[in-house]
Image (cartoon, rainbow, N blue to C red):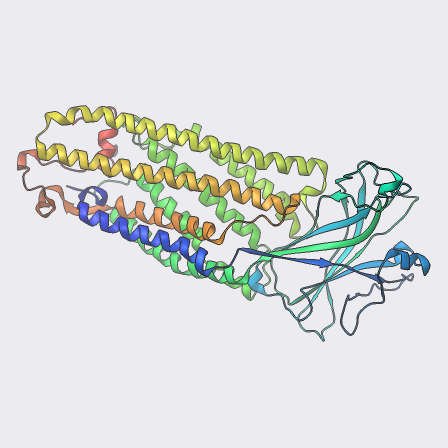
Length: 541
């Protein structure tokens, strides 16, 4: 009777397949290291101080920092005081990108953070828990001669987190506070060529608006977006890998349904893993080049979350099915204690994402990091997610150890077998252990990738926007997932070759009485491989 390809394929062919997969894995890292530029780019802007004396019932106008229609501006606030210009009549203006350049849909997203240069004054210092109020508006246009079209407008509050590096004395007046950056806006698409930000700091002493925030001398903005060259490489990888996984997935399931027995849980989970990999591979991002799909960031997070759930659940079930008794196998309910927390954690991830990126679909200026409660919850979430990822990996290592110990106990019966039969079993055990070690390596890299991506994204909002992951890390991990899923579906697909017919693979010395069916009696409890049966505590040699 036919077993799985991992059992029936000759060692030479398996080594050839492994070598090809290893070459593709190396290529995945090289694509990011040698071809793709760094994933993100940041541009720093110094806002121009435009003069705009507001008139009642007059529509607001857009003020440009440069060009033929540049605004009437001042260099310092001392100039404003000498000209009797009030703070309410000053608008900070930033044009994105720089003059002579254009933004592109290939940039995919744009995050803008705010940095304030605040000088210390004894009569105007930053009070505790100071809040800065921003009257901010954003507009876009696609040609330099087009009028500006309003994109978003809102009055936002941001809490100042500043420290003064010296004693607050008269001698240190004029020195600047060290302040954390403030998240300003996040766009899920960059479909226009030019963007304009006008920011006003309204002052109302009666309502305590922008009072006790120190002397703001300059406003700096940092725009962070995905590198267009990296986007092209990323789209190309998705376009190439999607049909590869789809074809192997259809081939795998076709072989499963051709069996006379129904598929077991392990085979179903492998197929589900292939579906989730195909879902995350689908290059729907190509449409974002021509359409203003602001929800693509949220959609990408949802796809990534579904894949994480399936991958983590598969590893638990994969190990568990090689540890359970025959009576306990092939039932998803047995794993509710392990899969349940994974599902709960994914729901928490989804809720956290909806609380920020979901709201940003309506108000791009919103950020969960702007309040004390929100920032604490966000920080706690990242820390807890990292700890849970590490604990999961340690638990997976323990399960792999249990599987190895369980199979090791079965090896005690091997010396009593004939040499050919013993070598056959030893070969199967070696192949399975090697696959488990590869699984652990994949799990370790996935854990590192998850933690570093969470920390890297958080750093943009904590203040260190220069931290980023290498392109080779992104393409390498993404390629590893695809190759791992591809290898699983290929190796665990039923083979058309019978064990007794395999005289070309070095097992001629085994008599017909010693022939071992790789998949034994066709019952619902049996699995795809002889190792699967052997690992069961009640299985018989």
